[in-house]
Image 1 (cartoon, one colour):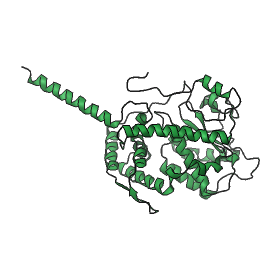
Image 2 (image 1 turned 180 degrees about the horizontal axis):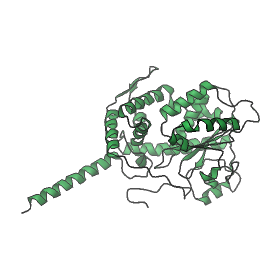
Image 3 (image 1 turned 30 degrees about the horizontal axis):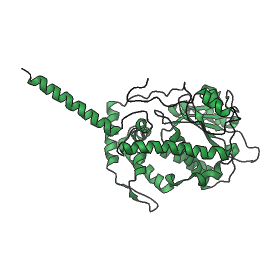
Image 4 (image 1 turned 60 degrees about the vertical axis):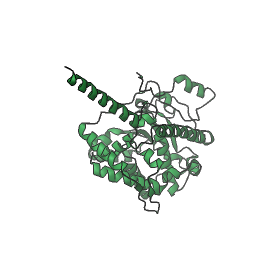
Length: 353
């Protein structure tokens, strides 16, 4: 239930999607999860975890410069500060099993990588040729409100190049912008169906290692679930062999050749997948600009709230996404006023005859 301090995340009513499909297959991104989707509640930080977070926050607030390996060393920018949310710091703490000094080291290393790699400088126009066949599509949400990121290597349309990796980074940044309040993970759906036009669509070992390193190092704790379909028996057999050696938490996230409607509402799952009812057709001229417009709008709204909240490092993502009415600065003021009022009340009681 919504309160004075919260707002219920927007969801897509079935009638809206039906109206969009009335004239043919859907060709645009879906803006919101279904009304019956629910985000899993996250446990509150323990006292020890809160202490580690407070330590890390103070360290990060003391940063004045981002080092670079490509002569881009310079002051911490607004974009850097905007990225350093409360949940961002917690993700790095979780990724390092709450070793706060290691978390600080990794956070700064990611800021360096983002600057050197030019993450914020990747443009839709530059990436556009890579996605002309729809080999990556952000479409709909799973039942826990995670945006679904389709990877369809069978739709490969370009040769191996740095831009292929930049394409993935660009799309991961966009899927993060589509995450609703209280949800900071994505649902990855990988379709390993072979291409009819290209004999080899799999990335080389070098590129695969680069992608894996980027995702593990600079996007920790972002994978909520990975659904892999049309898996060749050889690959599936390999995963069965190594299954006992995979970290239990990671293992729980991986699902192979399962009924996807268990995880994604059928009305937001492409009809080409078992259980799906969504008629979707990738039309680059329609989808690509619509995706950029949607993501730009969400990012602009979050940036506006961040600025209104005082450009705080450690701002909450719930506030940035409109779920919480107050940012960390306002909440701190309210908490201080409450403590002061309580102290004054106690002093009055003690002074009474």
